[in-house]
Structures are given as structure tokens and as C-alpha cells.
Length: 204
Ligand SMILES: CC(C)(COP(=O)(O)OP(=O)(O)OC[C@H]1O[C@@H](n2cnc3c(N)ncnc32)[C@H](O)[C@@H]1OP(=O)(O)O)[C@@H](O)C(=O)NCCC(=O)NCCS
Image (cartoon, rainbow, N blue to C red; front, side, top):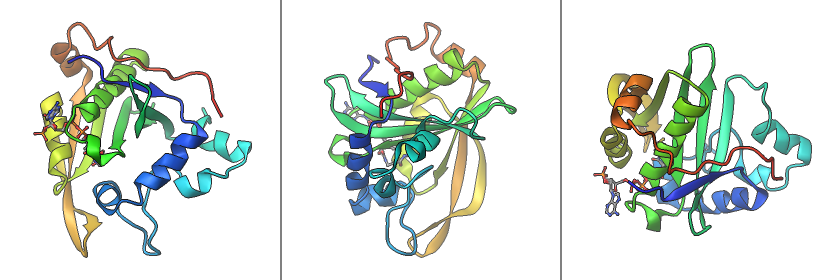
């Protein structure tokens, strides 16, 4: 599959767009739902607060190499330069693994291959740049498109967390799906080099 996206460092306007995307109930619902006070939940930082963060607050979230577990956060752009989502890796160096989270925030663009392309770029980063052993995701059972997408990419079902996700007034199971470095090598013997990744150059 040809690369459809580029991963870029997060800039302030990206965070502003992310906050707007999360105002859409369907997007927020598929992502992490809402806090009891009503705002859409996000991972690692609060987009609304981050819009006006000072440089120290910004760097603590996006450029802190000492934060444990280390989090790599990046913006997903189409190759024509449109910002469409965010990806995050929560990296545990001691265990040699990274948890992937991916959000295509413009839901009109769902089912066009952007999620798959973003995950492939993240796998390249995890296995080829960071040299980690395992990539994994934790997806609620009701999120059938995400489960199907990771399954198509080659993630294996590793386990089920019982009633781990509160959603719509009930508790739901979530599934852990993972890919090991040897499975990545077997599935992509030539790598996924066409997936451009830009990680350096802090760009506040
Ligand atoms: C889950 C999510 C990332 C998927 O992104 P996406 O861009 O829709 O993903 P893709 O298009 O690559 O794949 C989704 C489906 O579209 C299909 N598809 C891919 N390209 C397609 C195309 N050109 N035309 C039609 N269908 C296509 C894929 O085969 C896949 O089908 P499946 O549902 O049967 O697996 C997106 O829906 C999202 O951001 N959801 C909210 C956040 C979330 O749930 N994140 C996952 C938890 S970490």
C-alpha cells in the first residue's frame, strides 16, 4: 500500500484543530469519551489547555525526553499537506514495547486508508528506528472498525480486559492486540520505507 500520510511534529494550530475535532460527539465517543464535566477526553494532554500553553508547558508535553513512560506524539498529515489526525506512542523502554493510539479526527476521511497508513508509519518507527520488540493497542470491543483495521494490518489478539471501559453508562471489555518484531519483518519484508516520518525539529 503506498504511503498516504506523513507524521510531523505537533504545532499549535494542530492542537487547536484537534480540540475542534473532539467537539464532534461521534469522534469523541470513538476516542476516549467525555469527562464527567462534559469535555472530550484526550490522551497525554488537554488540547483546549494546550492551545494557550507557554513554552515550558508545551515542551513538557511534546519534547520531554525524560518523561516515563516516554510518549511520542505527532500530527498526521496527508501528503498534500492537510492535517487530519494525531498518533501517539507510549514507549516502555524497559519492556521494549510501545502502545499505539491513533485518531483520524476528520471523520469524513474515515475508511480511506489513512488510519492504516498512519499505523504502518508508526510501526516503522517502533521497529526500525527505535528497535523495540512489540507494538500493541488496547481497543474497546465495541470499536469494531479499529479492531478490524489492526487485524487487517496483522495485529494478533493477545488478551481481553474484562469490563475495562466505561461507555454509554455500561462497562465494556477491551482487547489487547499486538505485533512482534518478527511478525513485522515477515509481513513487511521490504519494510514500509515509503511511509515518511519526520520526528525531529521541535516546531513550537
Ligand atoms: C479507527 C480509525 C483510526 C480508522 O481510521 P481509518 O482511516 O478509517 O482506517 P482505514 O481507512 O485505514 O481502515 C478502516 C477500514 O476502511 C477500509 N478502507 C481502507 N481504504 C479504503 C478505501 N480506499 N475505500 C474503502 N474502504 C477502505 C479498510 O479496509 C478498513 O476496513 P475494515 O473496517 O473492514 O477494517 C478511525 O476510525 C478513528 O480515528 N477512530 C476514532 C479513534 C479510534 O478509534 N482509534 C483507534 C483506537 S487506538
